[in-house]
Image 1 (cartoon, helix red, strand yellow):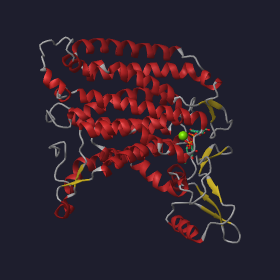
Image 2 (cartoon, helix red, strand yellow):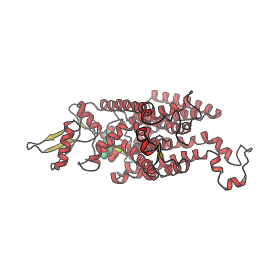
Image 3 (cartoon, helix red, strand yellow):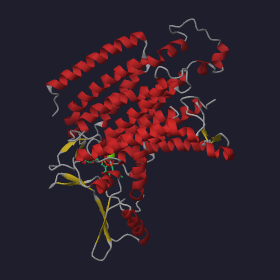
Image 4 (tube, protein in one colour):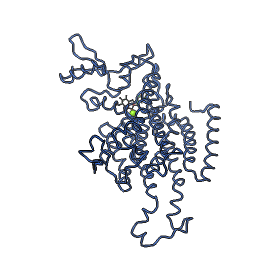
Length: 462
Ligand code: UD1
Ligand code: MG
């Protein structure tokens, strides 16, 4: 299991060689975007090999889990997201000198650009900091710091199973570095008011500290929402790859030849691409091993890591609303799960679909009601069941004894009937791609109905 096959070795060697050559030339020619693509290729091959080689090491250390939807509930390595996260962080750190090289050299007196002479007075009054885009390096490093914190949380969770009420808020602390840099660098806490409301509120509304609370909420939401849309092979990584690719497509709209330049949002979107390309690289390596039938599990580490990458690019790239459009399935899953998450309805430790060994298919998993639910809950559940949002079993007295667990994976099975694990994953992913592309379409076309302009054409920021 731990060895690479000869085809894999050859393919990986070819990708490594090609990426290495491209990287060598791109660094010499000072092309950070091409360098980033090449480094993502190297991140892919490194993560691929490490995931394969470290599987048994992780198992020995106790990082393993039972694949519950298989006839033989075999144990396989868990927490492989930690391998991805480490490869990703190393790639991001090695990348630092490439886009910032010029700025660093120009800003330090001993560097190569000795022509830049700065008056002592200006250095003392701190204006030097504004003179050079060090702030971008600040953004970048704050992103790495936030990611490191959240990866530690993830590994802690995979090792010790931290309780939900505790781990829910930890990403907010991990987000403090990016929020501080956001405040120093942009400090923009105004939002554009949709057209119909402008006559009452004006064109912009300043949300002040509420805006920071909103961004902290995004940092809490993204990691946790990926972690609860989980439980079948491949779903955590695939949904993250879909979101990442859609954000990269959105970013490219600002960078393609022919788009307005210099556009105020260009830097933010380039920044986002620098964070996402290596993420896609390591995620594809994990996907290869985690897709049905899974050879490894991603662990909570991956879910937190992936969610935080999205939160960082959304917050620092000023496109948190667009980001939320790409999270519509996760938002729905969260709202739908809320009664169980907040214990209005009992929440078993696992809500993943139930495996039926006889048919080799997945069925909706259920919550058993030892005592019938209260009247209000019973009425709500019956209403939901009428619009096919939940499946209910009654006993002979007409009391509710069983309800399907409230996740979109189970809901999909309620709607479309039992199916194989990979078909369920593909169905959810196709839905996610359609919703995501629709979200982007709304963002760039229909948004003009309610907002004055698309920021691709014109920036509202001062
Ligand atoms: C979250 C969900 C839980 C779901 C679990 C599955 C909530 C509140 N929590 O909990 O309902 O059951 O994720 O990941 O919604 N597993 C499989 N096949 C897979 C993936 C996971 O069998 O494809 C099982 C394995 O036994 C694995 C375990 O799920 O060891 C991982 O669960 P964990 O990530 O620790 O669960 P939570 O994130 O706490
Ligand atoms: Mg999990």
